[in-house]
Image (cartoon, rainbow, N blue to C red; front, top):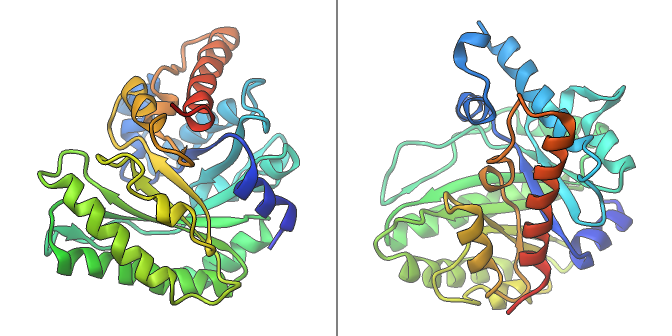
Length: 296
């Protein structure tokens, strides 16, 4: 583990950019950016276009280490290059801590949740992550209903995989997303916090994780997790909220910082001049930074 990066993620002011849209979500991300599906004919061309978009973001003058603590990458982004360096190395040299999305998507809903699909190649992926100077990983589950058995299954699976990631010297971001439209969202989050806390208490003293959660209905719901000695940082996903709404909610949660995806790139278009692109990205970064750092 890189101690300098660990200290930055744990104590730095800023947020983590989520640039990890993968196979299923890439066409939607490209459409939002102004690239229609008739502009590519296969996956290789599609991933080249989305890498061009991400390259434009991370090389932008406004994408700086004083506000962006880290960035979560998709596997293909890790394997590709930015200005002659592999993406993780480019970010690390810029002072931005690189993470890698490792999950392979979600199973069908059962007991009100979607567990992660099997990851048969996880160990080899983690070895490659280490070669590419990746600091940590991220993996997402989805909670749609208040079902204790389902929530417990999500948390148990997340921590089982997290132990394998820790064993490889990486810091896992555990992401049990709670759907923002779930009928009993507050009840789900209260039970989820308890379940996560129980698993955190079983970790060894040198076993560190991060958490990525939906901004809670009850403000400061996750305060005990933020303060847990095994937790490096707790970050929040935008979850479908608009940037304004996500930032408004985020500002009321002490110690919680952003890890936004859609809300970060929502105003960016391929047709924009570099000056316009950088201006809009800079405004968004400033707003997310403010909501992450300056609480009300």
